[in-house]
Length: 179
Length: 182
Image (cartoon, rainbow over all chains, first blue to last red; front, side):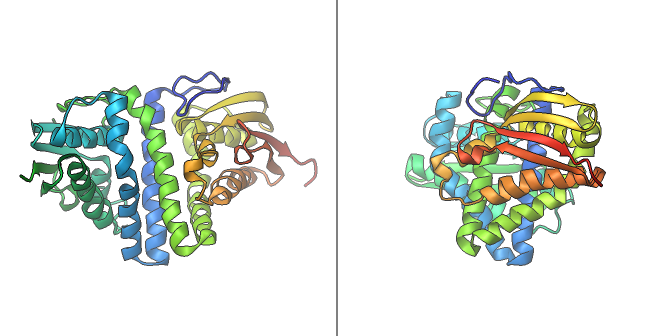
């Protein structure tokens, strides 16, 4: 087993089984989902749900400074301004097992729909006892969208037209640069 | 974008930069590691590190008993007994972006292996030096619960950890032991 950069995509270690990238991807997503909801459920139940929501939101807050530059360099994102903000968020959604439909994308305006793996979890019924959608979606994803756009264009207006937390098939967002 | 199946492996929508499965997986374990340490940083700072490590303990207790049989079925693992649990540990590490090297595996009771763990690497990263979660993550989460999972099969099993990434080692080195006495 050679010393490699993590994650180790092409394994060199010898084990009595092998997993494909698809198997690793699918299972890692399930691990993340279980871990995320179970951790916040524990905090919500043993402390309070307000704190659990603040922690959920804080996790994305801490991530925000690294996302744009990290994804721009790694994936060669071509956009500027609002388009770069949207492309950053679209990469994040894809990495987390979601998909994206772009309706409009320019330096000043973006409109898109995201089918979100975590939003789908909210609708699954499995996590109905985890009251975390405010921290995850409102103070988390929606705020992250505005923070990223603001960091690139000065001031932006973000609207979430539909929300998977309310049963919609996708989260439909617009981001506009405020002149 | 047609009605989605989750997870989406390859985009059926029209993102400006569609990511391949490999590109997605090349970041996903880092997102998990970042999320894990970030969640526990906040929990530890609010409620203390004993509580944070207790959360990690509780969650593992909830999941580990189901993991070995579930991974055995899902991935067609061949191991039985304690070796099935050893293979569960190896699968978990590989899923999370790591690798493993088998030193010895025989029958149901003999397994010795090294794991290069993405989360263990996180413990060595100065970015997470303020997150005092090694006990919940490694000692309890990985080591203790693997032993408990093996002991559900036979009480004489335990795992010895001969080296630990939390001490700066490149891998965690485990050996399955079955005591000779009842």
